Length: 328
Image 1: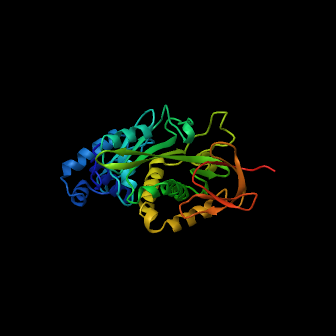
Image 2 (image 1 turned 60 degrees about the vertical axis):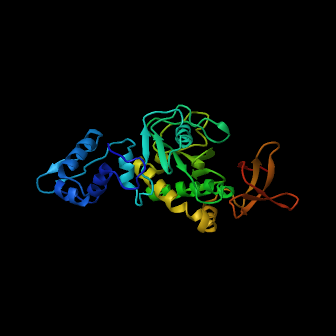
Image 3 (image 1 turned 90 degrees about the horizontal axis):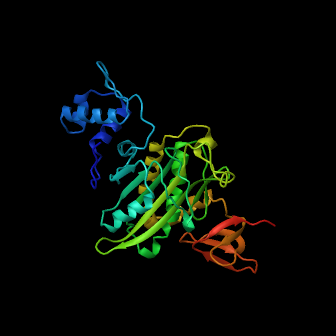
């Protein structure tokens, strides 16, 4: 299917899908709305049908979108994005790591933004180099290339911002309330649904870049025994299948909406995160290298760092680490 690597306009196939989701339409009507020839519409529909979309031609109503294939597709995602701030989306059937692919694109000088997804990863990773279990065709494994237009010293804000975007998208698509476990996990009913990893790099011409890696357990029904007690999926928690293309589009919508707020209203971003926090007000153990640190989580500072009230009464700020609820 057609796509335009760096244009912010919607590709033709995505435009056809977007219009047909609103209502059936005759090919000539679609051609007028999309400023192309009728033959281009028929060619587009043929590509979409080959990809698994059911789009019959009704003599009276015109073309109808009856059903979508259960697979991640760039044009399907693009057709669902409300504000097409990103148009370069690539989906792989399998890859080692989407973060590695995006990093390679960035070091080759590719323009931002762009996104790469895979139906499965063979070497997906989370924080501290941990392996991420990437079930084939059941989750969302996505990495986004970004060059935030804020001072590099403020780029760590991206982790908090992305966690909020994921939580909001989950709430949009399901009836589930999401929690955010500082700094980068999204929790539903006490179990991890999503994690994210932000990595940065440098290109000699295009400058600094950030790779935002996102993993979401969407439609899994089983997990390896070693993570079964702490991981779950949206399907298990809601009892319903999740349309993954819709969820990806919602995440991209929220990322695009929240990115400018890292500069203009990061305090508002932090307020929404605090409302969903699973750690604030709790006695925690924080691991950040060396011996664990214990304290009570009192809040987030202006950069999203965790504020811990120590046993001696002092208040300390932590920019990274892994937290767990402290047992008496």
